[in-house]
Image (cartoon, rainbow, N blue to C red; front, side):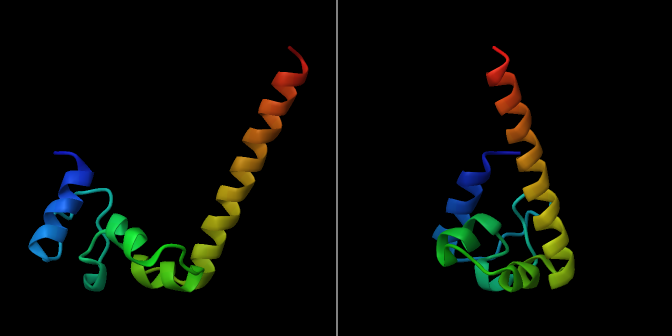
Amino acid sequence: MGNSYSCKEECLNEALSCAKKNCKHWIAYDEDLNCSLIAIDKNGSMTLDEISKRLGLSLVRIKQIEEAAINKVKKRNSQLIKELLHE
């Protein structure tokens, strides 16, 4: 599979929704040409509700994923700080 950024450019140039469902950036959202990279470029920051619509997940599930990601980052940062203090 080629570079996903070139795939994005190809879809933008042709103004066609991406048909490459095996691409890690593919989403079932025609307004953004089925590409999460295009969605981000086009819309910038999005609300959790906007994200849930693009991913076809409930708002509650998106909040759960967000919370898990935040906790993971906090844990990683805590570990890094401990490592730096013990050097």
